Image 1 (cartoon, rainbow, N blue to C red):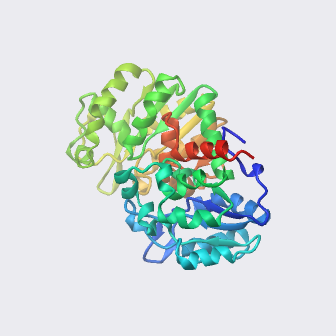
Image 2 (image 1 turned 45 degrees about the vertical axis):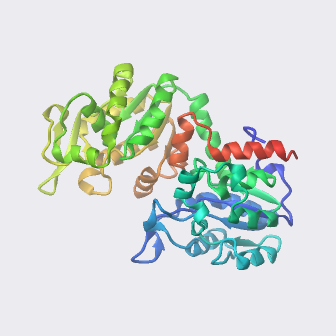
Image 3 (image 1 turned 90 degrees about the vertical axis):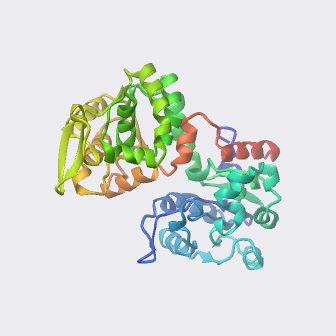
Length: 417
C-alpha cells in the first residue's frame, strides 16, 4: 500500500476477474481512421501486461472522446489492435459496454485473457454532462447501470486512469465502494512523481507555464507560489500575454480578441493580484514573435501593441528562460511556449523544451499539447517523467484531492487485505 491506496502488490490476481479502468483517450484522424498519438495507450501497457502475466481474467475499459471532445468520440476498437501489437498478445474486443454481449464475454474469459469493452462514454452515465449536472456521490453512482451490471462480475477493481482521476464518473469512482480496489502502475508512478514535486522538490524549482489553458495555470499558481514550491514561474503562451494585459498594456486587437472570445479576461483580476504579491517570482516575456508576410517577425514587449497575432516568445526571452532553467534542480512544464505546430512560431517551444531535456534538473512535463510537442521533437526519453494527465495533474498540484484517489483510499479501508 502507498499513500493509503492499494497497489498491484497487494493482491493475488490468478484466476480473478479484474475490471481495469484505463484512460486510453487519444487524438483521432477521421480522414485516415487511425489514432494520431498512442502515448496514453503505451503508458498503460505495464499494468495490462502485469495483470495478464499474473493470470487475471482481465477486463479493460476506457473512454474515448465525449461531449467535450466530440471530434474524438469513437469506438475503442482501434485501441484493441494497438494494445495487441504493443504486448504481443491477442486482445478480444466487443462492441458493447455492459449489455448482455459484454457480460457474456466477461463470464467466458479464461485466466490470462484480455477483453477490451467498447467506449464507456457510449453510456450516458459516463458523459461529462451527467457528472457536472447531476453531481451524484460515488455511493449513488454504484446504482448506475454500468456499475450495477459490471461490478457483480468482477473480483477486483484496478484504476490506472490517472489522466482522468480528477473526474467523478461511475467507472472511475463507484467500483471502489463495492469491491476491493487498487491503483495500477501508471497511476502509482504519476501520483508518486507529483507528490514529490509538491512535498519535497529540489530547489531551485522552476515552473514553465504556457499553452492556451489559462485556467490550469491559475489553479496551480496560488499554491505553488504561496507555499514556496516554485522559486520562479516562467510565463509564456497566453499566460504571459495575460499578465501584460493585467499590467494595463495593450497587446493589439487581434491578440486580445482571443481572450475576450474565450472569456479568459475573467482571469485579469487574479493575474493582477499575483503580480502584486509575487512580481519577483513571475518572469514575463521580454519579446514576442508573430508571422508577418509568412515569415517570423520578432519585436520587443515595449513595442506593443502588435497588429499581428502574437504566436510565440522571442529569442531574447528564450535566452533569459534558458539561463533560469540552467540553475534549476527541478523543472515542471505545462503548456508550450507558442504555436509550435507552425515552423515560424515553434522556436520558443522547441528551444526551451530541448534545453530542459538536456539539463541535469529533475524534469516533469504534462498536458496534451506539451506531450504532442515532446513527441514532435523526440524528447520523450530525455525528460525525467512525462505525465499523461492534464486536468488531473493540475488538480493535484493545486492541492485538491482527486476524486479517484479518494475513492481508492476508501476502498483500501473498507476491504482490508
